[in-house]
Image (cartoon, rainbow, N blue to C red):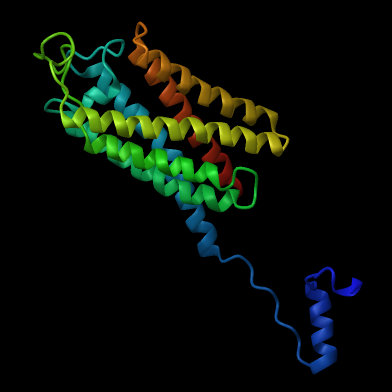
Length: 244
């Protein structure tokens, strides 16, 4: 019974010698990981690397240039309104798609490690939430786009409710992904990335909480928190891509 309690995979040399002795035919050499698979994983991770910088640059450029927009009073999502709103809508859709695709590459490189199942899943959910946030456009409010009356809209339309729901899903998933990545790096003995992961998740958690609580300049703290967490996920993907 003791000889059957464990199963040990034979090494290539053992298999070769056994095969030669038993049948006179050399055993086949194990196939290496296909180059196409490695290339595909790197391409998927590149999507995740690009997603956050793309979204941040497009959003902040518009925030600085579009008439009537004030980042201390208007969320970046408000940029989906007006004649140039298609830019931010496209930004949400493309960055969300890149994030969802990149999550597949993250799953491949994290497979079998602590957090290797949930971190990619949560990143994918955040990407899908971003895409939904692009589909649902919040109502014009508080002077933006230019010509909109000051203050909140009298009533919220379906677009606003859909956008808030999509944003809540995306942010919750992104916060959780950062904390799961923190656990992943802690278990691997990498203290620096573990701390950075938790700081990024906390930045979004506090920024979102401050905005939802009506704190002064809450839209700015939300923007800082969201961009910080998104960029950290891109950094993680960039590091993984170098060794993929």
